[in-house]
Image (tube, rainbow, N blue to C red):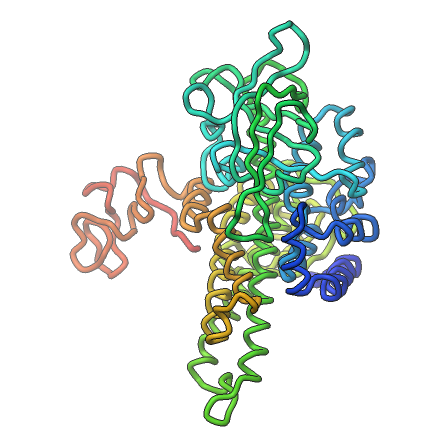
Length: 502
């Protein structure tokens, strides 16, 4: 099995890293977030026109590069390393896949080529601060997050005059890049709350009745906005078939599967950069006549961070490869440039080992994956994405916290860049987590627990038995880890549970 990145993938990583090292240092980041758009527009144009970054995962038919989730994840690992303020996440990871999946051919031709060339930025507006729930990362696909009726959110109604258009009413908080995006993809509820359905609409930035306000965010490198829709004319994304909105839920879930892998890679990049800066500092900072990095206690702390970052990177690469195999419906993705033979993944985070990262529809037989078996489509990709994102967020939080602590007094100052990584870690977990809910959702997707089993640990052969004699498990547990009857009852009527490895 070829366990190395392709030359094209290596070139994407190397070119982007060199450019960002030159154009996006800590001082440039601090200056960019103070601008009206919240990012360096000249740098964004260079990334779009020279490297094709926003169109990296779009098909060539619509002006894209024709790569996939793996290449986009590698690119975002580098942007995360530099804490690049840009509309890349909002445009290429959240909005563009939805337009590609749901839009009519006319809408795709109108929107996607402009996104690919960097002439159009977009943002996904999801009501109720529920971005991770809408993408299926921490909740079921029931559409309740969209509000409707007295639940708030955004309501959609057909034109009263009998026209073909729609009108939107409501307010959306915490829209990533929403203050500067030239196109908004707005999730709205049509038909009330109990019998309604969630639809997506396209709203141009200059629409009458649209009010956008930039908010003060914890992480200034991820600017957020409040979107107010006051009787705004909107275009339905796709075709209204009068259905229940399941197609929209599936498209959001597919986008969430890919987004989880990309976000995990981005968090790994930020964590790795924070670790590298900390290691460089402890090598130079002296105490008692020797570098503080030579002290055993410091070595142990940094070693723990290193292990966490490497495990998270392995899980993120696997999740990107799994997402590239197919969407939530399990259908394999077409092969494209740079889609063969990615790096091997050594079974970290309980997501399986020894498989190539990259495109193609069949796994090239490695440890834990039979030759020719289909891996990554459907549920497995979603589970791998959720677990990888959870592990990456934990690694990012640990690396950022240790960076602040081991930099000593200077790590707490505004002038130093350590606080930028700490704020990114805290903000990411608030926006896309929390970690325990990501893992709980992954467990639900994989069928680890029954519907009646609501506790984070439980079931038979688990930790919560009523009658375990010597351990934490079930009724007749003869070992420390429990027996056959678990927390849900004395007689084991709910059946055996899978072992959970996270």
